[in-house]
Length: 492
Image 1 (cartoon, rainbow, N blue to C red):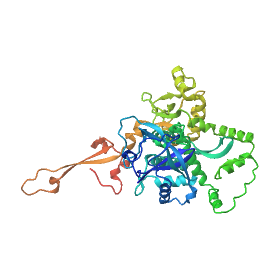
Image 2: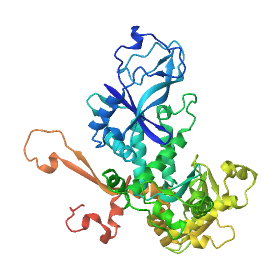
Image 3: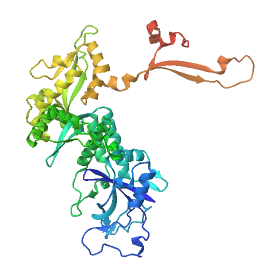
Image 4: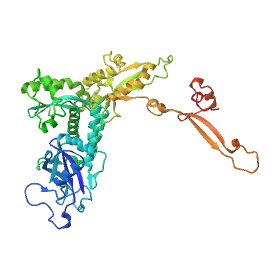
């Protein structure tokens, strides 16, 4: 029996596990508590290196044993009376909860998977509770499979941009995910679902885990998206050639640092070489190029479009009704909070206090977002002709085009869209349906009983939940009668 766990330490996925101890520490056969020595004690239910290697081989990972870096990691686990609490009673009985539990460091044997093996391993565990007989997937490992599925979705939908990262003077080209709209909501839900044991591993036994769940998930998504995008490039197979003894290809020359950056986006390591000043200047240029996307993705508000129906008091010719698309700012943390854009240009004091949250620059965000949305919905260009745009008018054909096409494009781009309830709710799902009430009279002796007397049908037609009368059916245009089309059953 083994329960598999996975945690992130120093930007790598580490695999460790729990197994029942040969002699349970709670049974009294071994000394309870920690030895009076410096440093964390060994975890009494540690699975060990051999069990972990056996599990990854059973999962189908075709890597030699020496490809895995086996190391001693520090896991901060709930501890009561100097005894670690296990994740399942299948491993051991927990001590009587007579004292509160606290986090304490324990030494565990961890397997550091090679870069490509991380994705293969998580895919092998996805959607499973048992990896093999007696091999249970822990909640933290199951969580990382969900996070990988989300990273795969971002990659498949091309929700990423090229970037440049600087760490202690080393520059690396990478692909970074772009989260906005529903993707930001999904990331927030995953952050709330992350088990604490996902952040239990640290390289230093003297420091308790301090990274917030949102930061851990952000780093994991960045690394997975970068790997998935890079692995589909032409240089993805080069490391395998090198391992088989083939000489590495000579690094080509580049006419500019920009060309080297584009090449590094396709190489396995993504490292750039050059003058530190020029590399820093390239990093600044890339950040400026990405700023329009960064402004909208990191904003605590998002631009929202609300389609408002024509006013009934104003008569107009058929098809010439005046619809209005109002521009709003919708809070990401509370979608019910809506601020009209006309207030954001020159906000009053209460609105200004809301917009200042998170160093949000409302005017810059609106100019960038309105420009981006105008490319998807050309009708927005009319609203941008005013000094302080807060919406634009549509006629009935334009409103229909917004409902059926432009609203979906804006939603997919991460903008909020609010449509009339009759369109987005019950009204858009109305269907013509037939209902029948069957009545059967009590059987009596005698003769002359026919089929109509045995069973009576009372037919009714309904549009959605509204029943249609016989007069309404007779006034229905004949070319639009579903029951009068070729091949349909008659109705009278």
